[in-house]
Length: 284
Image (cartoon, rainbow, N blue to C red):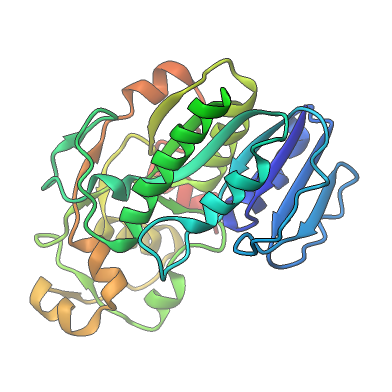
């Protein structure tokens, strides 16, 4: 099987690190920045997905795609993805796995959402993801290709823990003000993504998390516990609005619990780090 990784960020790094567990003939990786993976079966090519003259001539024969490139920030729709899809429409594509975000649901006040829940994105970032999901589904319906969409919660893992913030003494929200959120270890997401390409699951959308909702405050405190660090000072929400970045506040203003029953039915046993402390220990 030939695999195409469109986008080469944190998730792609983790996927490549466990790729030897899978029997893929070739992995083609595209991103703006050049990377040398040092693996015989991985070929990296530099591409700008915003370029109207882009080509993907290296994709020969039947292939499956994982699309991970983030949308442009200056558009309401994901024009970057739309350009990519336009350029591959004549290629022999078996399946596309699209990495979306649980932010497409918006704020549910801590209530449970499943894959049938109404999408009501708040941020422009999440609105672009809704646009992207629609583009993926429309493209696959027209070209008779298969798709999987993962609505992914907050990703953590090696090199992604907020240790610098803790060491700098940056405050966190009081437990009483912290809203419920969802997390997934990057290794678990990488494993799910690989398996989405080889399992017989097609044309489905899945919520992705470890299945154990938490809060940002609890996340920080668990990191401190595992690493034996001093716990940050805690501030209320009004104080946080004065010192937290707009992006950080946007995450804190939304709250929902992801129902992952469907994920567990279709991808049974794929979540290794259901316990947050175990996931943190594996990340330091």
